[in-house]
Length: 242
Image 1 (cartoon, rainbow, N blue to C red):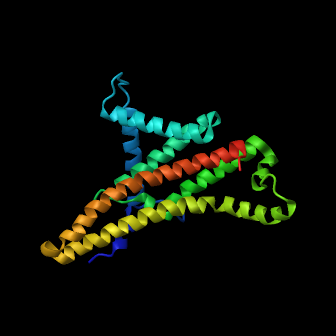
Image 2 (cartoon, rainbow, N blue to C red; image 1 turned 120 degrees about the horizontal axis):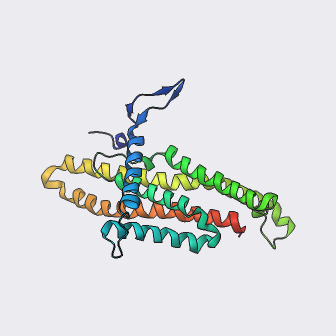
Image 3 (spheres, rainbow, N blue to C red; image 1 turned 30 degrees about the vertical axis):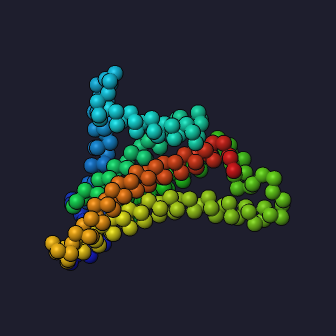
């Protein structure tokens, strides 16, 4: 029986090196490319007709657009409009990577910490740059809760600083761990179906069907959580709310 972790193995499809740097095109890069193509087909090709009565593809694109636009508007306000394309791109890319990973013999790019941390690091650095660009050194007041006695500040300020720098780790680990755990569970119960055969394999097979539906929900929720936390971080940087 194959290991449940074998599905997460990175495999080179095209070997390519830039000096000592390994820039090979892998199965992870392939499925991220497919995710980008799917997003392009949905939001660009699917909305080209701009019909007054939208078809299914255009309706899906408009629904996704309005969903993320409402998320940005509710959590960041009018000042967040300029960052809407970034949040929409994050949400759609993560959602397609998560959903495509449920296709048999595919690859889930978001099940690797290097992918999720790269996105979280971009969010963290971008939010920090925005904060300093808008407020200058006053952005550091984010770490100083208002109305707190000076003695407590000696304890709370270090906690605020640590919690701020932990953001990219918590953001990336949450997505990576959920995708890794869910797909591992599906693989394990898939092995039970093979081991138990036709007579005893019905119970784990039924669990797989139900759990696949749950994984679809988790795929959406994890994309939503990543996007809404990005909005909250942007709100902190723009408005310096505590």
